[in-house]
Amino acid sequence: MGLLLRLVLQRVAMGLLLLLAVSVMIFAATQILPGDVAQAILGQSATPEALANKRAELGLDQPAVTRYFAWLGGMLHGDLGTALSNGQDIATSLGKRLGNTLFLAGVAAVIAVPLAILLGLVSVRYRGRWPDKLISGLSLASISLPEFFIGYVLIFFVGVQLRWLPSVATVYDSMSFLDRLETVAMPALTLTLVVLAHMMRMTRAAILNVMQSAYIETAELKGLRAFTIIRKHAFPNAIAPIVNVVMINLAYLVVGVVVVEVIFVYPGMGQYLVDHVSKRDVPVVQACGLIFAAVYILLNMVADVVAIISNPRLRHPK
Image 1 (cartoon, rainbow, N blue to C red):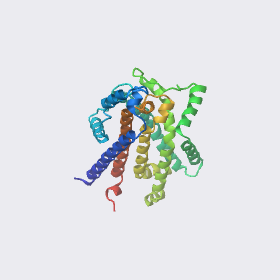
Image 2 (image 1 turned 180 degrees about the vertical axis):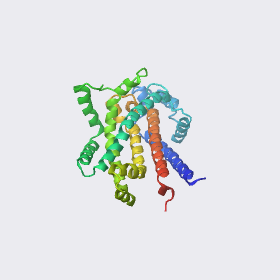
Image 3 (image 1 turned 120 degrees about the vertical axis):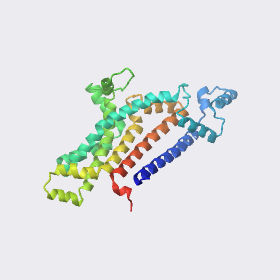
Image 4 (image 1 turned 135 degrees about the horizontal axis):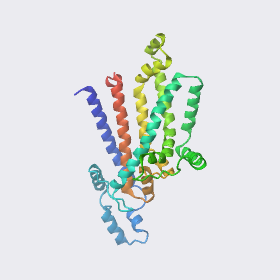
């Protein structure tokens, strides 16, 4: 078995073990929450007999270990269970919501990733001059602002004062692609501003680190243009840390989208999770938590594999 394939399989195995550990933590965390699900469903006036029957119906009278393996087995077979609050199949409800969240994250990524890399290249090219200072200043300001503040500022100015874009991101199945893009423009812009600065600054730092190398000095002595040196010699050798930070921010776009979806009333997984947390719907919380964790682990694993492929030193550690 080749060394590269073995390293990739090791990362995949570590990712699966980590996901298993996260499933244990999610299940344990939902079990120690205060309150009783049967009581929440039947209300305070429920009789002890009715509560006992409801707990037996939900399987809550079984030991926690038995319930965990039953839940994990269902997840592995694609059976996410039934929502306690409305009796709907969780997998069916989550399918549409996950699609909406991935669409929103995809639109934000299409804008943020190339723009962040371009701004990072420009910042390195004009290092210490006004374009670099302007980009660095704006990125610092963007990092300092939480996403809920950026979202509400955009709603006030872009949605209410200027009326350029809708303030509420309600999407439905029959909506055309262009209408859907217009609807998600404001939440996508909010997410872009949240992750753009981080990716731009890491791109700038990674390229500046490579610019200290001897071969860059050789390229400068040959008389090559500064932007050509950055684009052809520095950027390809800084791709591993850049891909790493891009993947981490893509994971954030999917997992950390909860606040933005709530602000813009966007029907994604984050909004679905928040709605059911307030109803103490434990199966929905468990399913959403595990899917978020799986997406986060998967994207970090991809970043790891890309770093191994692009950097020979990681394949032959001393």
